[in-house]
Length: 162
Image (cartoon, rainbow, N blue to C red; front, side, top):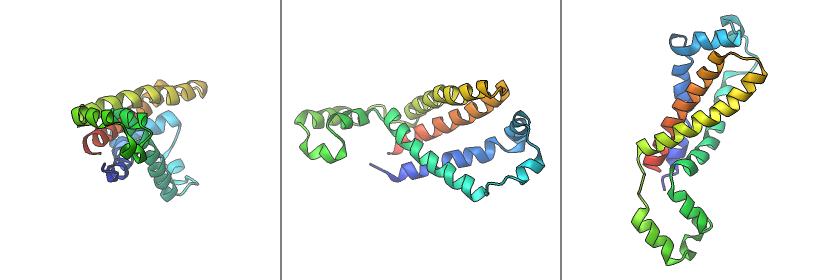
């Protein structure tokens, strides 16, 4: 297992966000949907180091979920009680892993599952809140689009390289 890929995949939202929310991409539309101005952005009371730090921490937590969703072999590992139980597993576990341990372990497969999960959960989490907050559809689609792109890339990287 390459656990380092989880730390690398957690950088994806920072990288994608720096592009996605750039004024030349969706930044101006995002500011308009939120009622922000350049001045209000500059006067944010939260320091940017804190925004980036917590974005990374929250993204690192998400990699654990993408790992479970995109790497199907994690289900077999869970059935025996986790990584610390491999030495106690029945021979059928090792036979299964010998036969199917690398099945569906590609960037494309992880991207598919990561993107679907991000899109559906993004619509649920962002969309429901936005409806009650009387936000625009533009607001919803900008954020859900960002989350979906992040999910595609994070899921793909994790599935391919973990």
